Each structure stands twice: as structure tokens, then as C-alpha cells.
Amino acid sequence: MHTHSTYASVWAARAEPIPCVLTAMADEFGGDIPVGPFAIIGDDAIGRGIVSTLQGHRSRAVLMRNHGVFTIGANARDAVKAAVMCEDVARTVHLARQLGDPLPIPAESVDALFTRPDRLRPACSRQARSSRTGLRSRRCHAAPVTSRCCAARG
Ligand SMILES: [Zn+2]
Image (cartoon, rainbow, N blue to C red):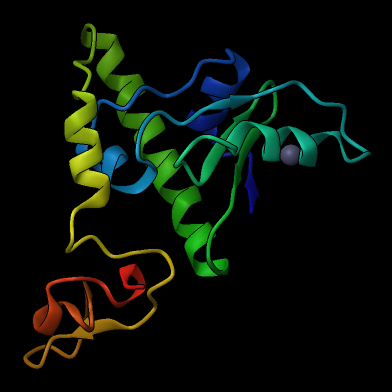
């Protein structure tokens, strides 16, 4: 999906990756949110730039230089979630910058957050429902039984 959401576009305008300084970023994107090349609108240059930038990244979001946010996902809902999360962390990290230098998260901790067993995988749309409230939880429906997300198996 594609947005021109304000804070993420501010990073895109400066062609600066959003550094992974929040656990939510490690959780959702597995590291920095990268910046792709400038591309003229109207042909497949944007698509090629998105694909080449996301190769080698765990991020489902890319900031295309001077443009805005493009996200991918296992399904439409997952891509929308990535776009919403991208704008949220773009805003928070921007604000943190106003007060000083945000502290990076060590690479091994980023890896641990991104790969932790109870993290809901994008491909898993079968979240557990609370028997008390009936609301979906962040946990995979299989997690209470297996301690791993069903989408992480096999
Ligand atoms: Zn656009």
C-alpha cells in the first residue's frame, strides 16, 4: 500500500532511514525502515526501487526518496498495519530527535524481538480470542498450546 503520511514523508524528503530505536520497530520491521531511490512517477521505476530496496531488509515498509511510504504484507490488512506503524514510529522518532540522540537498540536485541516465539507473524490471521472479552489478542491462536505462532511452523 502507499501513503503520503506526514511524518514518514518528512523522513522520505530527507532520504534518511528511520533508525530502529524503539522495540515496536524491532518487533514490526526487524530494524531500520530503509529509504529507496528517487523515482519519476509514471513508469515502473518506483516498483523496481521498492523491490530492490526491500531485498535484504526485514522491513515491510520503505520510504521512497522525496515521495512517501510504500508497504508490503502477507495480505491487505498486514500492509495497512505496516503503513500505520511506519507513520507512528516516524512521528515518535522525529519527536525523540528534538530532545537529543535516540539510543540504538543492539542488533542482537532487535533480532530477539523480531524472532521471539510469541510475536504474531504477518501470515497468521488466526489470532486467539479472549474467552473473557471475545476480543482478538496479539497472540497466535496456536500460541497457548504450542508457544509458537502457527505461521512460524514448518
Ligand atoms: Zn505517492
